[in-house]
Image 1 (cartoon, rainbow, N blue to C red):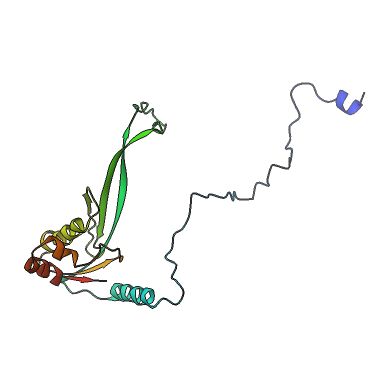
Image 2 (cartoon, rainbow, N blue to C red):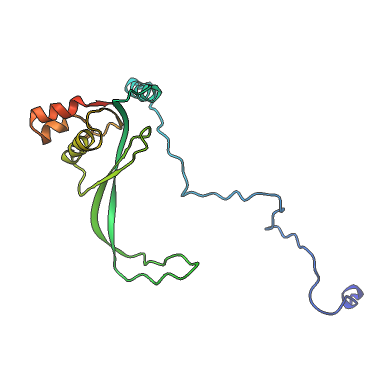
Length: 187
């Protein structure tokens, strides 16, 4: 019999820290890989004059001083899937997150126009049932007639195939389309 073990104090296990291989020193920060987190950047294609021109144009717009009769507006759009619950969620308890079932029923989509006038402190969202040229034309008319009447609108947006002032001519009579288009400078 090993006398060192036999003569130890009675009661409980020994106190002390055991440095197993899986334990790290206390001063080391956690550095776990989180694949769901990512940064998205617009990486320019090599030797693309169109990209460089558009980028410099937008950057120059942001450097401008705007007159009182001009407003800077940024716009983008995104679609969102709409879902319905197939089972009743569990009641929420204090201090606990909501518990929903993973199963759902698809309930169509909605399009959101995200609009922002940063220098005016204005940022509405217009929701439409579809993502069409007509919906975009109606947004442009709303900008000119409802949101910023009697102002020149400097509109910064991506170059999606529906993001053209020509959509106004698909939706409205030529005189009305021209009136709206004269109020908007696209970048």
